[in-house]
Length: 500
Image 1 (spheres, helix red, strand yellow):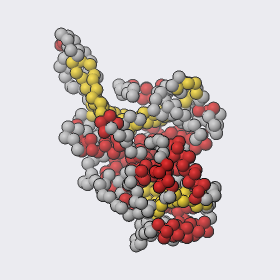
Image 2 (cartoon, helix red, strand yellow):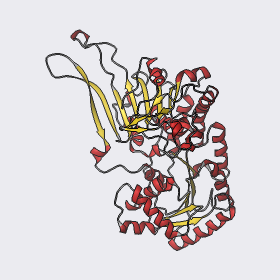
Image 3 (tube, helix red, strand yellow):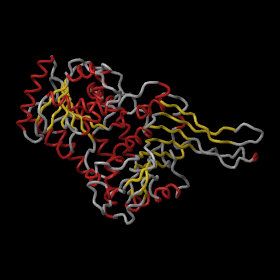
């Protein structure tokens, strides 16, 4: 979130350069930055993969990827030609140390040819099990300058471990080679415009921050809903589940931005210090409280957008008797002065009714029913809704009198949409985050203590769920809003989930 701009050119090495993430997100994001002239002209991009033949074949592969996944189509030939000159390929194994010494020589040749100063950004678009070997090989081959020399940085994709123990082990592997200031743990949700706007909305507008506390807020709901199933990620989901895949990172990051105190400055450590304080303020839960305040779900057959779809157990690479969750809801309490007594309801799921990510701050209703004497017996609570996807924007719901001789109050909504107000489509989240990493701005990336603090709360949940396997899976139809137990979780408190 820094406004600082660095024009230092660099060499970016993408490990997993031919993988799905590279084709769908990374190369299209880099092409967008190239097209917008945000990359220095000499910056080079090297795809590292086990299979491939040459720079030319790699460029052809990435051209086909852009034809399918670029945000603005068609890709003009002149723009592609100038971008392709940045692309290079290196074939190597992630575990063979000689491949890394050969890579170092190849990068030296590319950098000499293009006049690059030796700044390097390594993107680990690889399975978590391979990170340790790559980081060790980078260190042994002399790629990483911790103090002097050109800068060296590494971007690590989620998941950051499977639990607290593995997260700490992964962080130790990284810290053996890279200093913490060189490590950028990426969560693409933090690159979305509405996510970045949370602090601006709160702290840049005098009408909201005075209300952002337990005196005025009744509760907060954070929803990450997807209408798709696990698609071709059945093997991954069998190991992870939605709690690891979405709640531990995306949802808890959003919770931190909503609940944190104003930082002393908009610099990386000041912002992340306040996020860590939120995580450390989440009230620990006993096993009994976890079972009471959390819900698991797994989708069965159903219909989404009018099309019949199979249940999770019939998906590719999924155990036909699987107990893995594809839906999770969780009630948490933040025990600090600002939020004591205000529940935060978190939910995420696959094969739900629609794709939507939003944060809803629901305010308390007025203490006196002023209009009861004229027949108004109930008023909808005010709500501020931050839509993160798909149509990024902010909506404020409040009550207004319906025109006419009878006093009747109906909820109305003031709705701001980024696309309508600012015109052009919003930047791709990965494009913003890649530029921040090149600039060395880690504000929107997770710090080590932040990752481990999140796992300190999620790991007990995983342990309790493991020791108490569900008896009702699958327990919701595809195309619905999840299991009945999730509705009951809020109904017990006299509340209900929003229907986005």
